[in-house]
Amino acid sequence: MPASRLAEPAALDDLLLYRVSRLRAVAGGMVVRLCEGRFGITWREWRVLASLAREEGLLSSQLAERAQLDRARTSRAIGSLAGKGLLLREAGRADRRQARLSLTPQGQALFGALFPIVRDLNLELLNALSGTDIAQLDRVLGLLQARAETMALQAELPKASRHRGGRARLPSAA
Image (tube, rainbow, N blue to C red; front, side, top):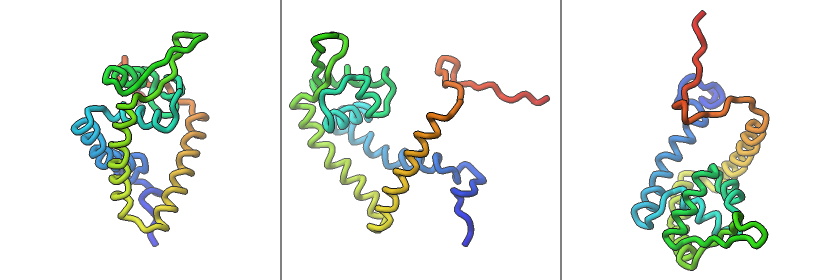
């Protein structure tokens, strides 16, 4: 049996992260269009909304961590959702800068309407797999997530700079 393209990548299409990115772009694009077109929220706002539906009363920093968004984007999404009447910010008694976040009844209703549709899109995508394949995929995704988190903690990579246009120094041809 030939080795997997993933085990011996020779081209961009063979790289795990590229293939996962392509899958997310196609399938996730449907969620983006659904969020924006039918519900009037961005996918980042959807992640914030879904995170708060699962665990209300978070601080914005906790929410950013749970939604895996940077703090600036999380803050913008919070402001936008609050402006749309979907989210409430309750200032803390000791430190008024630390606001606890929760969904309004309108935010809960939006989540209640959107989540089943997104869930059904996910289930439709998984119809390509058997029950055994789905269980194995779930296990493998857990392993890959844990490995990625360990690698990120151990990595000694330069921090990306959007101000420099993301340009890295190319090795010189000496």
